[in-house]
Length: 346
Image (tube, rainbow, N blue to C red; front, side, top):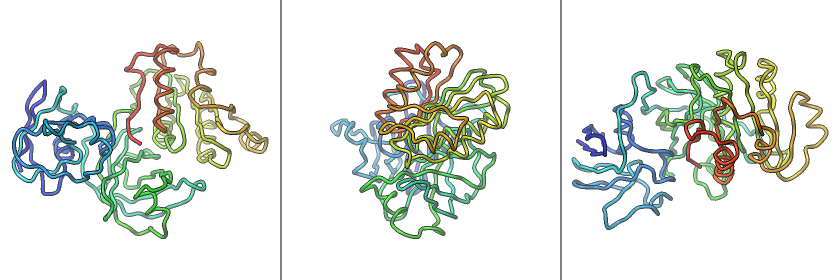
């Protein structure tokens, strides 16, 4: 099918394959269509159908609450063209920059699903074809028989990567997470699409790094830290990591974080528990970390006061935590919006 998208800046025409969403088709063609989550949650990829017929892949997508039915609005991440069609997008759209990691479809063979805590698992997938991505990006993962796709950040950084590590937190009633926690799943082959996301670190960034992560949101920040350490970023710039969870039993990746700290002594890492003081045995096990109690974005604000010059902040975690961190970074730290990076998915 031929799909035409008219935006404020330009009009683009691209091909959509049977069953492919309009957003996937455009991104696969290196056209920078607007999106944030890519999975039906945020509503950023809203467009108006001018001509043609489009099916809705996930009628229950949360982002549909933002649409105006009388204007024939749809989510491009859920719209599948059934005929040639034309759409209008209320935003500027530009081609992807030269050298950008262009998204595409791939298959992920689930090698292992490993518990990290009582409600967090790590997925290890062998991917075909190998994926070229930037540190901090994510992929969309689908499961046959479950409506919609879910967005998960890469924990590792390799280029190209034939293996991906993802982190999934159990969400009661969540189709994909309940499937993962429901029994043996190793060996399943899952459709993936990516890479996606703009909260990325590249080696040419001449800024100090501030990473604020809550729960499974630490995943993409681990990829950023892996690449930053590998290219010697912390030999020239400071690094501050704040990782927050509710209780000590919710902690994971502490050995990996300690490895980054050992390799990069200028990297400061603070562990924050919101619901209890940090137990003495945890402090003793990781003596190179700092510890605090409360909300992670508030702990970061206390520790970073007066230290924001030349900083780029990366934020990931539950939406209330992300919103709180952004308020701090804008109002108290007075960072420019361009120096606050996050991807809006949950």
